[in-house]
Image 1: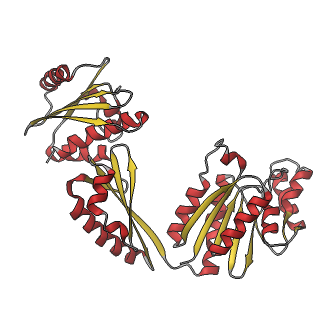
Image 2: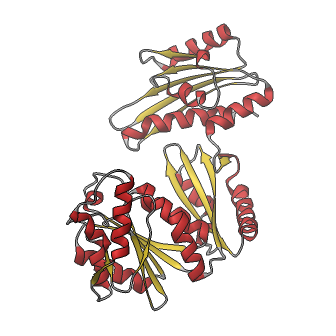
Length: 382
């Protein structure tokens, strides 16, 4: 499999003024095409630093994609940076200037003189017509390595990747492989516990196994490199079976599954109805469930914090009033250091109560509490 790198260019990215979404998009396309992505970086609008980044990337990788810095202004340095990296000059391409002028005229506008800068590309580079923008893209090849420079406007970049770049890379590198990922979702356990269960699998070379943490949820990502999708699926299936055996009931789904969907599906299998009593959540649990089809009318949101004993009584009363099979009372008590969660669940089979505490970033406490409450329902519905 060829190895790729991505260089996002723009001082505005380094300053945090805008978010780099281009890298994530290209990374997904690389994965689907079977291109190994080893590194990504962000470089400001400085010609020498960009040129150095390109030289280093070309030494390591077969394919280098740059995004941004192809506009008409003085602080758009990518064209000159690529030329500098390969020890060449910029040259004016009349056909590119005609394309730029033609595009402006189609929108009843006139290209200004600074747009003329966009018709300069490195000597020896091959232009890529940008049919959805004014900035021509281009690529430069040397010693079986290729550098492709694309505009930073996301829609322009995406169009060029899909319609120009991927066919070009397929032609040059005869792309046949695939990198496929499968994500297993767990809840009710911490990262260290999951790592203890599957740590040995995390050392596997192919497919690889890695962990990704969210508030109240740990994802296990299984990624396979193979010659075909069916081969990758078989590799993933075998590894997923091992993970399932080791992790067990902490797993609630995979890929696009959500905890709220799983909860409502389990309730539906029994034809059970759910009611909620929320204290300190502001209706966040009902809101999550509503996205999966739960009726918000089956919930009671308490305007003030109440003690666990009061919440328990209110839950019992609301359970009788609503005549639902399942009722959850949930109280969230945030603090400056520790955030506490009290859960009281009534089902046809049992009445359960638990206390949980969260010591992570306070801003994530509410998300953790909602996820933990939903998982408590899931684990207690057969």
